[in-house]
Image (cartoon, rainbow, N blue to C red; front, side, top):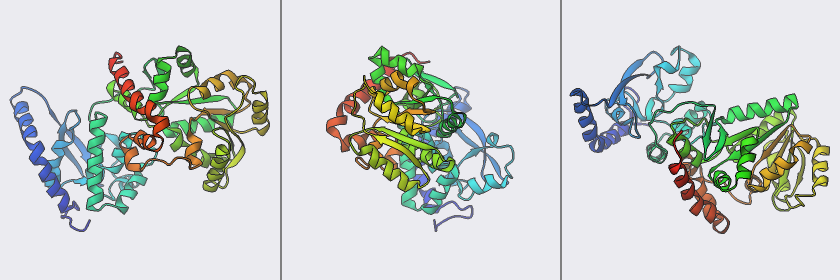
Length: 410
């Protein structure tokens, strides 16, 4: 960022903020006048850290998608950047002089928008804030900053950003109880289960899962009886925000698997891959070993076997003694199989992971990060496999949104 003012705010940021104020300024002025007349309360002053020794009171809207719009005035004044590190409220940290805090947050000037907040908004915050800040500093040119602004605004509109959210340990969507865990929470729980040799069964819930369970009471009971049901996908984010709930993370198997494999590699643990077409699990396992050479793969097997008579499959798994069994046979088949056979599986952690092996066998590719930041990865899946995925997404997504809209808020 070559063109900056004395406070290290790019001149281009001030110009863009001025242009944005042309559109938002009239609304801001009207709200200021209404508040001055005592007719309504729209704005509040909130203290933020703007540097190692600097705390400043900034004015924002009390709530709403456009909550940060008044901060554009601060950008024009050169006090904060349009895009930078996350604006940290004064009540979030006890000691602003903490060196680690300073290194993490103030290497880049605090901004109205940040890469970390964008990713946190759609549940990609298993990438740490420091990692996001460093990634931003490596590419903080004008084009990169504009992309963050546009994606942040779109994400806020799509998922009703700016509202006051409450923290809960568990929430319910369409009659299914979901654990409000982050990626870190999930990996920590898995590690504890392996260490203690206790049995843990983990499923994932996304919009497709809940559409299936809405029409199938038996499947819904399986989901509600599982040890852990993790929140997966943008549909769950929409449902949470509708009910004023802060989802701790978008905990999906595709993002979790490399982190899990790294943890298993470090601890000497092992994994068994069950599911997919012939050769898919084996190829996925080979690719995972290339990523994490220390990972032990206890075994692999395709998902085409007699579900009602699978003594040989269970015997093979138990003989291999994996710490984690990944079952990828598609919903609801995989959950039903796990529920029916869990008591026979001598494995600490069993997870149902859907089509996860296809990604790591490189049969299908992962969506670009910018689509994932917007919670629109399903579009990429639809484009890759329209014949197989059209019903799930073209019909299923609107149906899910209609169902949660009709459901009484909790």
